[in-house]
Image 1 (cartoon, rainbow, N blue to C red):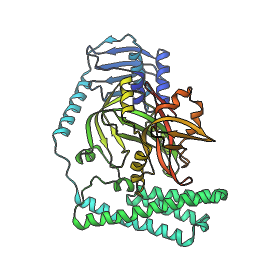
Image 2 (spheres, one colour):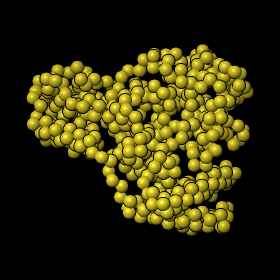
Image 3 (cartoon, one colour):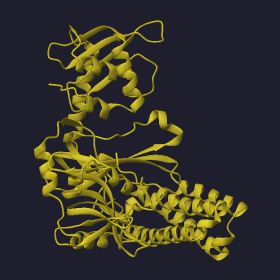
Image 4 (cartoon, helix red, strand yellow):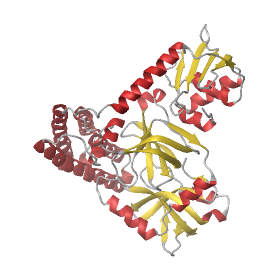
Amino acid sequence: MLTITNEWITMLAPNAAAIANAKKISQKGGFVKLYKSEDNSFMMGECSGSGKSNYNTTVDSINPEQPVFGCSCPSRQFPCKHGLALLVEAMAGKSFESCEIPEDIIEKRTKRETRREKQESSEPPKVNKSALAKKMKKQLEGLGLAEQCMNDMLNAGLGTISGNSLKTYTDLAKQLGDYYLPGPQILLKRIILEMESLKDDPSHAEERYAHTVRYMVQLQAVIKKARQFFGTKLESDQIEVEDSTLYESIGSVWNAAQLKQLGLYQENSELIQLSFTIYLDQAREEYVDIGYWLELATGVISKTINYRPLRALKHVKQDDTSFDVVQARELYCYPGDLNKRIRWDEFSIRNAGVADIQRIIEHAHQDIAAVSKLVKNQIKNTLSDKFAAVLLAYKRIGRIGEDYVLEDQNGHTLLLKNIPDGMTESTVELLHYVPSDALLEQQVLFGLLYYDHTTKRMVMQPCSIITDEQIMRLMY
């Protein structure tokens, strides 16, 4: 049976505006007729709109984990505000007339079920080795172009790059899009953006040069390792994709079938969100929605990443903060390190309770030195993320001068500091507004642990405080 909650509707909505408009439709009595089937698996409504005729809106929830929406309105959003409004009507307890399930809905159900059975029973799709080999050869050409571009920059001298030369490098970066190399392309764009910023504001030259050098080191590592990786695969004729983080570094696009074939999935997972943030990535020209999630059974912390291109913001669903427990039928994991990227298609939700919060606390690290060693092993890899999301139990959080410092149960201390990448929102300052000093003692902190080049030591950006009863978010 379908359980409708405000949280569930929010997760289905393409963006906040769609939810707001859906609630307005419900509040203003936009639906002139409401129907539902006897088994509650189908809802239908007629909604007045800007057109001459009412819009016919349907929600088929025969599979509660993946409801199917339909509407006669011209909106390109999916689900549209009318479909969401129909759910709001049901959640509000509005009166629905009983109806038969239309024949076309039954036919569509049958087709979906047939398609599902075929997918589950069919063998993994065969790999087109010749097409993959052709793609790898093209990628090797692109790696050569990226290397030549970087060498030209270094030979010319970073301080001399401006005007026409910047335009030339920008054009070369665009060309990398033709070589199936979005990863190296974005790194090259980051280098160019640093050079443009240096030209506009020379007062931060040292910082800009430091960022540029780090991006160049990372790009060189991608080029070297990818060239060797692809070369070996072509030589041995072992073209098939595999569980390697290098695919993430070059920007490969994965589908669920590939991840499942590699065994990078698990069934019936329960996850709770620890933190959520949105930032604008200028190099990608996209908004990036990142949610950090803990799997309740294992304590593994993973992340969802949703990219929303600036040119298509209206048509790409925005992720949001989630307070409930997500029950994913199949959880897919991308190749990665400590915090792998995850995704799911079919899911249901339930209210998060105190027992769930206690399970989060049970998975927290107790010792700063041990968790720092774990993260250091990741960031030593040039291609890995330079921070990791962790849970750390603390004895107290206090101030030393202007700085906030965390002390663990063993008396070891850790400086709390914002990540200086220009994209991650600041949170340390928010500790000043924590409503009770008791929250700064004997609790668990969720945050991003990284190596700070200024202080030459491991530091942590706080994201959430987990108490015995709740998750108090600093980043959401």
